[in-house]
Length: 226
Image (tube, rainbow, N blue to C red):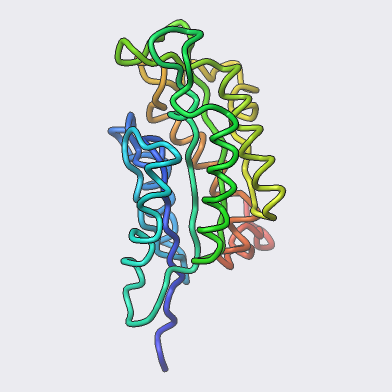
């Protein structure tokens, strides 16, 4: 009897996808990869996060990265997960400086990216994570703010809605817990281990991702289970 070939999901994004700040478990993407490895028929997850990436740099590497992960001849990955936008929102030099990519350019570029990605495989997109404004500037030059993050996450949601792409908002969900400042590294920008765990738990139970992975039944509680 032939062994079923698992689905492949490519995770593309910045340091959050990469897992920076989580020396214990390697980040939310690594946690998800390990979780899926334990499940019968769980997908294969490739972490292609790059520190410092913004929308333009991600778009430039999208087709090549996805095209190299088919594993088998003439096979392409079956899904793309995007986590991008945090670095684009950062203002350069001062709190009211220009963003690394202004909101208009971000929305236009995101629309183009989603169209390009959808030609390769089904796409899912996650939102942004909060920052501690009092810890800014990051690296003595970049100013991140919650107001800008809200604006850019709204643009992510707008573009995904127009493109009929599943979107998981994160910012308000995370900040709804009073403990959220404790989920960030001392630099005020990157998630720490607990922050990555919080994102992982939201992703692990995201209906759109479960549906893509054909894992909806994994959440059903069997009779008599605790």
